[in-house]
Image (tube, rainbow, N blue to C red; front, side):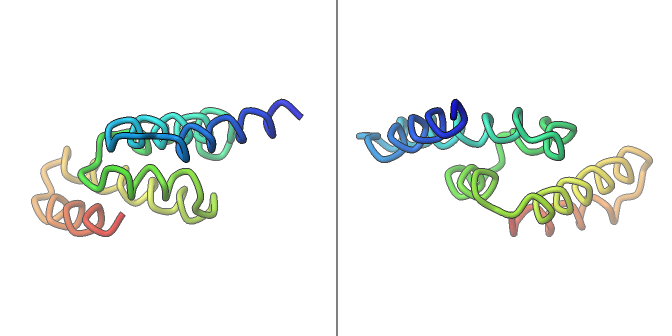
Length: 102
């Protein structure tokens, strides 16, 4: 019951946002709530809540996409970051290409 109320409250904040900034903040809060309260997503919090250039589109995706799709994307990003940190220059290109579609 509490999740339904919180979900409705978060949706109301999105629907009632009167500025682009307020909408972005409301979408972010809804995405953050989902990540924090979904055990399969919580381990990827840093990647999922990173300030990606897609902005609202990314927050909406994190808020609504199937969990398996989000986990697959986050695992790919993390693998690419690890390769880049290990000195794999091609991994940087793959990361930039992959995140451009998020």
